[in-house]
Image (cartoon, rainbow, N blue to C red; front, side, top):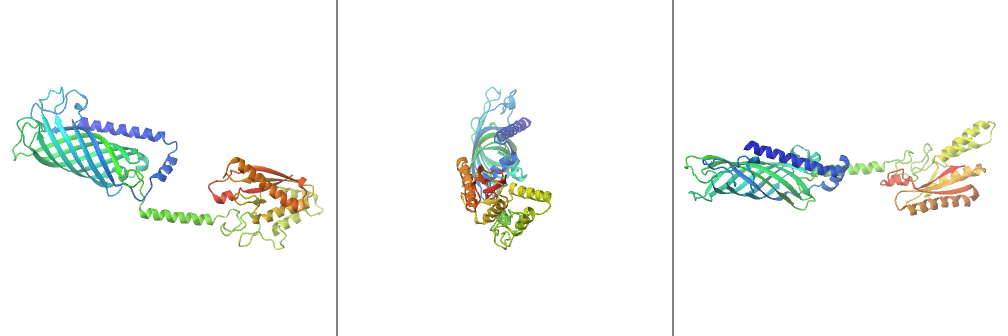
Length: 449
């Protein structure tokens, strides 16, 4: 009989595990994504320690029985099934791994219809006090197990046995050990379904389970009873989720997270978007051209204050000044156009603004000087916006930015016919969740024609 019941438990556990896995598979295409989403919901320093549990199922006295009496139904699957037990209990978890619980069980043991056993009835009321071990947490597999859980419980019981028929009419009190296994599946945040397989062993028992015979006091019997049930566990408390599944972080973890966040903030401040050697939090001109000398505040060095960084001014003078080497001039001019066309010279804008930042005046001045020195050249002025906002708004914003840069160049003496504005809308080449990255795409770039 025990082998059959163990087989029943094994099948039940596997069935619950398979169903839990199927349910998890429906909710995840990517295990890492699911874990990240679960962390957002379940992580906390506190969890629901109390839970109330109620269940029903079948109890069978395994031994002893008087000849002609038995609880099984021969020739049937698992000896027949009869609902004859009800349980109500409470559990308290000291930690995510260990806790205690108390249960009250009411059993009504009788012969099964058609079993061939002589009729009997034994009313068995039991109280258990047990320790609980959360095996999923003990082996640290809560992330892999998902909604599936497994509890082991063990302790002692005190029970009363009262025959419902036969010559005996007194109630006997006895006690012993109890141990069991409870697979469970979380169905709501604070509710789980569980199955329970428990074995009770009474070390002081005088009644047979049929209640027909009663041994003398000096002949203590060893009685065993097997209980299989299913039920609901409801967690109580302010936690967002049943304590058996909450991903717990203690205070040290919280302090470590806080420290990591601060380190992340410092790393963010130390970013150098324009690669000029000055961190962004000190850089007042975060769009300086790579390789151009800057001061301690990230501003390109312009000692003569003519709007063109000294290094670029020297390069322009060397590149487009008249000399006898026409081939060399053509190569240098081509390199300069490539430098501009690849976006190294750009005007930048604050969020939702149509006028360029103060730091962008140097780059606009560079384009102005180039156009003055190359009167046959024209330029496309191409505006962009970041991903925040709707498409129509960003298209208009990017066009307005290009138009305002054109207006600056026209007012500086460049013929409007040489300037063509292009509103390119959103530049989605950067992470839209990063403010630092979005600064780089709120811009106007130039393309020499």
